[in-house]
Length: 395
Image (cartoon, rainbow, N blue to C red):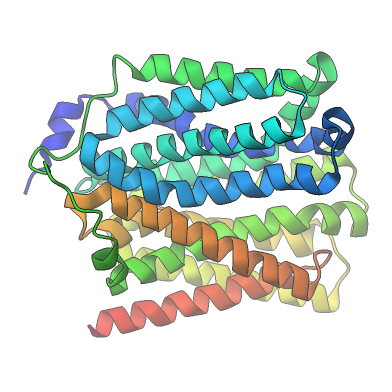
């Protein structure tokens, strides 16, 4: 059946990416660009480091859980109002964060900022599902979004440090507000409603979605892919700077090569999916994660921490991340076209909980200054996903 939303959407793939990408990037950038000034914030706000850490943790939690609320809302009232409302909320909170000096107000505003990011993010991905679910361009968009999110942790802290050094910490949040407002103004005349016209009384359908084996298998695959980068991001500074002796600039350049590997692989994502299919692409992505985990384990056992033993294996994992990220959304959401908002919400919420819990556990249990957390996470999560794919195939 042809996708009617594609003809009414009216944007070429490059134009659609320019329209959607800012909302995808801002949700992550609000976390990463803030990191360089975190050590200064207790003195600035007159509070404790624990409260400042809470401004990071709550942002992550609300960003994931908020989508469970905004997904069904977008199914009921449409993607466009949820997207624009979320962007405006994010911008307002960012501008207010730039002028407050109260720890309590700062904490509340970070929660509001995360709610705005969550609304914009779920509306963006629901729109991709509405428009590109039956088209090859969808895999390209999902893959590029994954690559963009890989670049943000590499470049965001550098940008935050440069802005704070030249203009002060408040300029970081002012810049986030300006970017969000610019994205909203760009979307206002161009972001057409894509919610299926027949869905006048959509149901949240959470129970139905959570009963779907395909939803769980592909969401697990997405968690394996995104969590691999999360664990890499969390352990790389201690492995490369503390153990391998890299400078901050040298570390940034080495870190960026993993993002580059993802971007290059994304260029061929459409061909991979056409050749292997959704399940085949996910299986090969998990195989690359296992291959990268094996290289990490060998390097940890028989060599000193270095670019070759830690970053090069991450190149293989990065290829696997793109293979998986290009197909997991379509695999998980395929059966829920009439409730795409709710399905997208659960997809990201479950993924964020798995990554946050399992990723943090392996880092704490295996030590954040070795390659073991990344190797263990990739191996265990990839094997679990492959097992799920096999069971799904038998059904």
